Image (cartoon, rainbow, N blue to C red; front, side):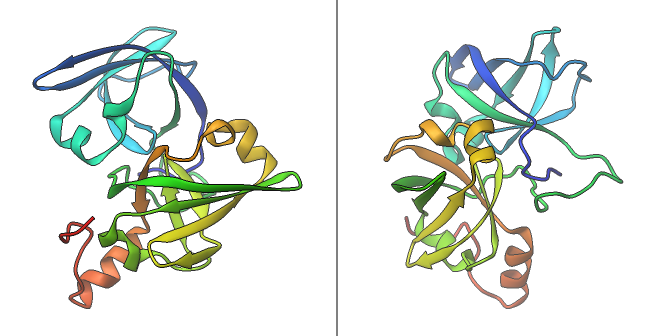
Length: 201
């Protein structure tokens, strides 16, 4: 489990694409690592398979590439990183599983003083899980939904978030990993509502 509070922004150092998925090397300063530990990369839970003091390596399966934006990555791209939380840690964001529900698109950005209002469009199956003042994870970052209009929602990014993440440089049309609130998914399941894997786009 994660909190959606980014520890660091890493850089894609190397990519090895094959028919069985993607191997990625990420340069960062999260060392020391433990083999097999989980690190969320743009909100996607990946397993550390090897490491040095300056980087770690992980694999992304075809299923992961199909459900996330990791397949869009290029060498030099910057990604959000967060280690799995430990029992007893403060939960400063919200409960995040690292299991991406779908890929959305940045469709609008508007500067308001020192703040940035950003609007994202979600795949149709995720729209029912959006709620004003609810939580959502965008590229691994825990954010609060300001408003919802159909398949779109907007968030207000504060200066700290703009400084410590890649959002400040993100352009309209960018694809982002989305994870809706796990509590909303359980409520929908108990009510017999369609899940996030329902057909539609």
